[in-house]
Amino acid sequence: MSGIAGRWPVARTEQNREFLAIADLHAGYGAAKVLHGVGFSVAEGEVCAILGPNGAGKTTLLRALCGMVKVRGTLRLGGTDVTGRAPEAMARLGVAHVPEGRGAFAPLSVAENLRLGAFTRRDRAGVEADLRRVYDYFPILRDKQREPAGGLSGGQQQMLAIGRALMLRPRLLLLDEPSLGLSPLVTKELFGIVHTINEEERTTVIVVEQNAHLALGIAHQAHVLESGRIVLSGTAAQIKADDQVTRSYLGIRVRP
Ligand SMILES: Nc1ncnc2c1ncn2[C@@H]1O[C@H](COP(=O)(O)OP(=O)(O)OP(=O)(O)O)[C@@H](O)[C@H]1O
Ligand SMILES: [Mg+2]
Image (cartoon, rainbow, N blue to C red; front, top):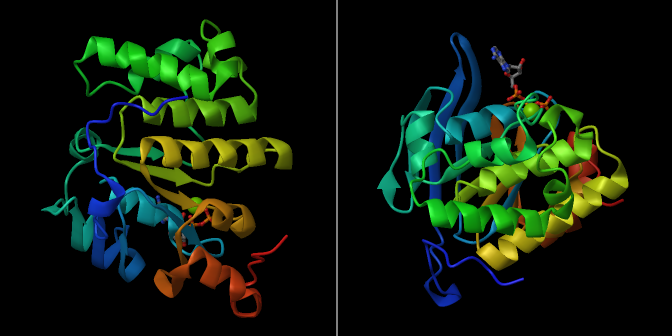
């Protein structure tokens, strides 16, 4: 399958190492402070894995990156300061969020759900082409395009959620626990597709995942979050090699 004729063509040689730059990020829910000065950068076209135990603030971090929670600190996307922008503004900038729990509109058909993902776009021909492209990634969605989303299996709903995010033509794709509730086989297939999307579209991806082994399998860089702070950062290979540290310190298994 050929890659999309992207709106954001950037050759490998021009890769922006600080496509997303996060500095001293604080976020929470009212009085409940969750993130305490998180900072890291994501290079354009790379997959970044966020690992960490339950309650570490991983979901909150993704919410902060797409404007769903109030933040203090600095967020820069493609060199532009986007700190404090609303979710819709972030979507228009190409930040697509696939939340925990997927959030399909159950009574609507698969195709209608996918079209909703393109709500910021006016290029109808492009939207139709992207719909075909999503069906190429997820042929089961093509087969079920007229069926209500509520009738899909868990794995198919996750595919629909990712497909809907792709309809935005994202520059940055935020995936929150894509494997949640899925069988190992379906999870593996899903990660394979995310890997292909990253390779073919050059979409920058941040994936939050409990299954560290799978996430590190497709990630370039990884960060371990604990109690709202980054406690370990490195290339996926470095984090994998640090199995002893991660297992004893955080109870995360990075090898199968
Ligand atoms: N809407 C909310 N209101 C208040 N507190 C919240 C809210 N959502 C999450 N929290 C709290 O923020 C902290 C971090 O939660 P978060 O969901 O970001 O963690 P997580 O790393 O995604 O955990 P998990 O692995 O369980 O998904 C937790 O203590 C949680 O109870
Ligand atoms: Mg979470």
